[in-house]
Amino acid sequence: MDGRSSLNDEPLCQSPTALNSARVRYKILASYASARLGAQVWVFAIPPVLVEFTPESVVAPALWGMSTMLATVILGPSLGRQADRTCRLMVITSSVRVQCVTVIGSMVVIALGVLRFRSMSGNWTLLTMFIACEVLAKLGEQLADVSLKREWVPRLFSGETLQTLNSAMSFIDLSAQVVSPLIASLLVALGAFSAHRSSGLDPNNFCLVAAGALHAASLWPQLQLLRSVHGSHAELLRPAPEPASGGAGKRGGPGPPEGGAWSAWRRHAGGLPLLSLSEALLYLTVLSPASAMLRGILQLRRVPTWQASLAGAAGAALGAGGTLARPALGRRFGERAADGVSVCWEAACVVSAALCYRAAAATPEGGSLPILAFLGAACASRLGLFAFCLGMLNRKQRLVEARCRSAVGAVDAALTSAGSLLTYTAGLYLGHASQFWLLVDLSAFFVTCGACVYLLWAALYDRGDPGSARDLGPQQQQHTLEMEDMSELCDGSTS
Image 1 (cartoon, rainbow, N blue to C red):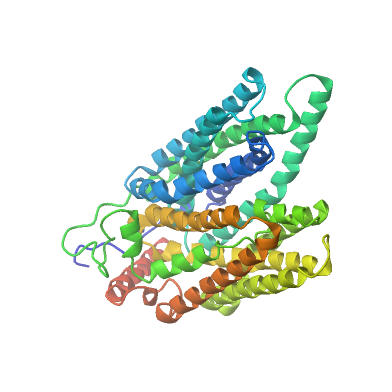
Image 2: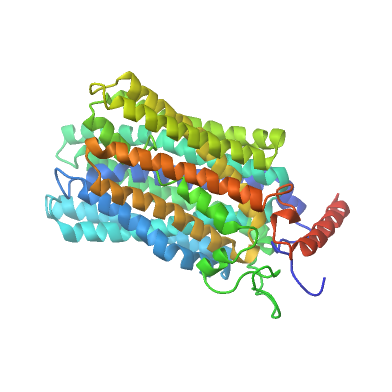
């Protein structure tokens, strides 16, 4: 083997306890579900309170969204690269603690605005403090998610168990998006009841404080459960050693690319930049049924609120259906065909939605038939989007080298955040209802480009079974096949 390490640097004989223990899987899923539910309720409660800083406009919510996304784009990759060289437990612990402290800080800012200043209108100092806390919380949340999905899970599990766990985590994401508005609505109702009985916080501020307390409390189970997993499988979660000198780190070599996170991503074998670009282009769209921008346009067109809310819930439900159907689709037709069908389905639905919105321009305001068809096509696109994203997660866990998984994952998150950031920025200039058709057409264009980029990647790089040496550069194929043979020997010795 010439002293070289495997491309993915996985332990050759992984712990049978880690691979087969349902207890470890349940701990990981329970920790993820706890954190995601708390985070989603918190995010849903923020915009109504931010509007109080800039009445009669959405400047404050826009600044909040753009600041958190911009921080993810600029700082996320460097934090991910540093996480690759750091103890996995320390990464999770630091991320969770930062989230907890900054969420509490955000609650203190709102309390200051309500109790001391009596009003938050025009208080740019408090708004700046709130956004600063949220930027740090977003970075901590991203680092924890990337580390768990890109490092912990692929090191502890493999094969169909790994894909099943990925599907379950994606389902948890979407379920939290469905449940969080219901919880937030209950908190608002409870706040209204409390304000009626006493001169306390108004319903929106009460909802934010309660959601913040729930979010901070949800982080403790996540930390304790992951500490338990790390304690029993610390050997599998050690940081990968630095590559030996002499060819490692060069393009096409067996070691990871040298340099920062962007360099590791750009030089990675297997056409990884094309794969990441195809996924990022799918986020250059305003056709997310749950997005604030689309909900605002529907409100301007006087679409009934219950129809807009139903579209948001239907989009999340269809996305959850896509994550559940994706493993079976891959087994039935193969990974490449499953991903190709998923991304082409999304592109077709988005193009159909654009055509329907054009037809809606000639209809009166309200819930007309073209608008309902537009919402239906936008919801149906989520089926393909989340199935494709799950397939990309499975593929990148096999393709990306262990020494730079967090870095590459952070770059992927930065690219998708950049897509959302550009979308919101375009909305500031083309936010009028009469101009929204242009954003819809651009969404159809970029999503179609994303599908084409994936098909190009599949034609250039994916010429065999996924996860095999054919996914990699030609100079790595022989070395990786040797490691696969060694892994088979280890599996036979532990059976």
